[in-house]
Image (cartoon, rainbow, N blue to C red; front, side):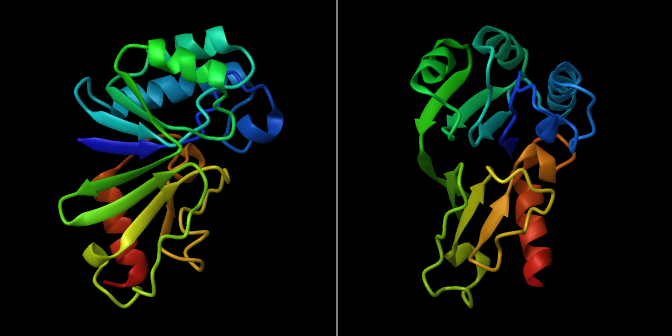
Length: 181
């Protein structure tokens, strides 16, 4: 199975981040993200993480990251520094894809990025399979459709999905339901 998420922010000790997610502190958040992830993701599943894996304590962040199941693919975000990229590259079952990545699933086309990105080309009336869907994070919103007024943009950050990765099939179903098709 294929999953998406973003903005894990392991070891990010700022109340504005962990409190809206329902946690008392960064350590409770770290433990629960790992638990939720490993209850959702199987060892052979692929997970695309669209940026911002860790902040502050890189060594503790690496330890959290290495506890996550599955094959992990990273699209870089604003907190993914050159030093962190080197850490990611040294982790098992981890591939760094860069700052943006085209992705195809069956008949559907996606553009993966950390930041919301307009991919529409005056094609909103076309069938969903003929459009490019942007999957992103960055905004820490609970509303996965917050940027749909700008184009076909769907948010995968933990904040929008009960602190868990979301499957590609669920994403497609959500978008179809939102578009009324």
